[in-house]
Image (cartoon, rainbow over all chains, first blue to last red; front, side):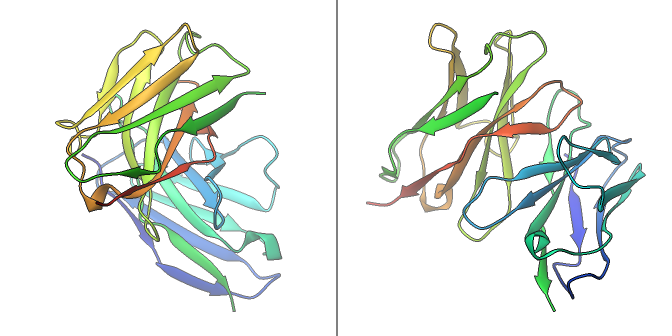
Length: 109
Length: 120
């Protein structure tokens, strides 16, 4: 089973600044890595798939990078609506399985 | 527009079986290539994948839950369901259903989630 580890657990950033979130896989997941945003009381929303492709309707300030075991989500200029919890997910297993990181809470500094 | 909606009891007694249904609208549950999944989130904690059912009825489960979980599909109602047996308080969570459009694609559509509490 592939274990996903996110860091940091909490990130404090001021509006307008850049945020960088990390995700590490216990073994290679190729580029089969997604990022989700979750706000209180809501279902997760897909932001990034294939490690670096933005999902439909996601603003360009969200970008993803990495492959193999190390991945990064960057939010270039934080807006008020970006403060939320972010999860990474790998979907590289066969037979089909997936796993999530424990989440990074992005809070206002 | 694809929509998913979870339904089921909000309260289940310990040792009993949790049963939830996900109703799908806007697309057919038998569309080739689609995986339909269940994910849960205990209060204040992270996301945990429970399992998938493929459009052809094949199922794949989390190793940690495999002995207690069954996911099935009702094509006549365009629904799929989750059964989790022998529940304990640790199974208290918001349960989400979601869709992958391909095995190498993440969950792109989610239901709103339903809170299930395990308590006597």
